[in-house]
Image 1: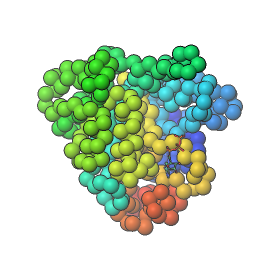
Image 2 (image 1 turned 90 degrees about the vertical axis):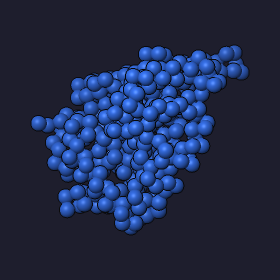
Image 3 (image 1 turned 30 degrees about the horizontal axis):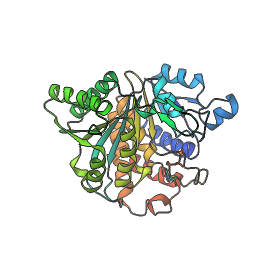
Image 4 (image 1 turned 90 degrees about the horizontal axis):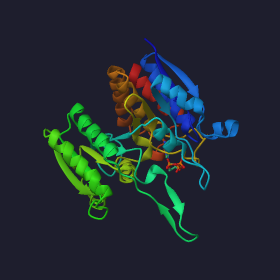
Length: 334
Ligand code: ATP
């Protein structure tokens, strides 16, 4: 059986890291037919739209996509293509595993938790307007439906991954209605999943605790904005954006992508760290049921990192993207 997967190489370092991960995936022997579509800057130039309908249609057909970062032009008139993609396909859950690599210098070792971020609402609903000329208003939307759905998803994932504790992040002491509702939904599911230890932590305190004691966490669930910020903070704990994977998941569709952006400062130089993209590929293989090859990719990465010489420049080394990729493939098939 061949898997049909939509491939979006993206902007900046996107093509470099996605091609690397694609090569590693192909080296596992898992049969994939890539449906290559263009989004981001190229699509903007050719179709005047960074996210053409053909991209959405391809993902709807294939149900699985592998994607590089897409740049959003700063300023008025453009909505983020990433946010649009998540909203149009109702990819309501953003999953970011944060796991330290033995041998990679980082602020912490033995870190292994997953952040689950609500992906469709909160301040990202995109409802903003000027109030006169000197004030602007952004509306924060939190609904019971979306909050229950993400909390249930988080508890289910905790069970599926045999994790014992779920931490819900909020600021309900100040936003008593919106964050209060999110917390209420979490507490409702905590009663239904009483085999999982439940706690709630205010987002500012959580930021400090994560920096000090990240090993204390297992599954973290958060509304969109807090989840976004804590995800990057957490990537920093284990060595940076180049080392953390991500997935956007809906009821029957999923888009896998590295969590970093297009990093235009190093684009085209062949020095991007493809680990985040490779890790996203590993998540994708698990998602389609190819756990064995996923496991082999993961072990190969671990082995590559055991040797301190195997580092791209962002981690203090001098391997080029292609060289790093080849080392992972060699470890996998060697
Ligand atoms: P965007 O505007 O698309 O969000 P960005 O330039 O802000 O992109 P980030 O991903 O936020 O990019 O990265 C910030 C910086 O971290 C980059 O400028 C780059 O120097 C570094 N960086 C990010 N990802 C990688 C990577 N995979 N390999 C090496 N360096 C990276």
